[in-house]
Length: 421
Image (cartoon, rainbow, N blue to C red; front, side, top):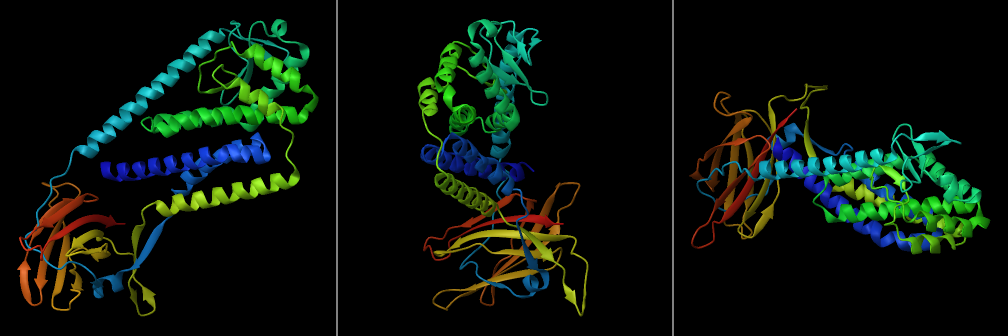
């Protein structure tokens, strides 16, 4: 159970890290090519790739073929096989992972509660809500019913033109659903709290979000660049430490935002090229993430005449990673409960033929839960070398190793048996 969670979670972490590195490398050139809006849309690579990892990704195996035709690969030596006890490290790692996630979630929740306390009881005025604190806002807060929050001295601090630009800025956030995007990214930070790439990405994501919002406002009001910059300068002292809202915090690079205001709208050709690049990146990243997920084997029904029997129940998928005598192989077979399966290999010089057969049956339920008994017979030519028997948990890897002084019969086998449903 723990291993089934840990392996895909680690894979997702690696995929996310690779995607973040890609985004960080591409975002600035893409922004220079076609503006801040396209750079912000580049972050769509992350959710699309993560969703792609959950798409069906199965390899359908023919049960009859797998049971009757031995795979032409396996080992060149073996003796008694040893059972490796179940490791406690997966449980420890998952426990630390979950504790860290809950701690960061609690921290972000406390920061948001502090932000809400700073707001006091906002009073509505002209479509916006005045906070009780002069250092809170402008911001957009609320996932389901987002509200535009402005400082208590909003009408005194800003001119009418600046007020209009600030409100339009927050309306752009509201129209794009940026509060929901920030909340989802905060949850991603909680889930992968130990990954520094995720925290760097969160800061860059928020910056790209603000730059894209600035660009959208300036595109509607190109003559208001100076007024917009002045509004930014007046807002730099405002602090709203909430990861679940859209705001203008002081940690946003002011110089970069003002310089971005000076950029002209990209030409149609540049936008077309940029969207073509973005589409390719999204497609390739999503496909790569999907292809990186492990293949789950599913047995196909055995065909009898023109009719197919029902899907096999009580069958096992056995995945093996084998290293022996310089040969590496990764056979995967599906076997019916109690039915022998055989895998064999001929040595490279043709002088040795090894046969490896095994039968899987459920372990006694009163002693072993969710486990399987593996009876093996190992032959070299016609000679029986060993008849090992082991019990292993479903979905857990059993390591089978042996070394000989002459190194001619060394082998290392990892077996994982899973129930085929």
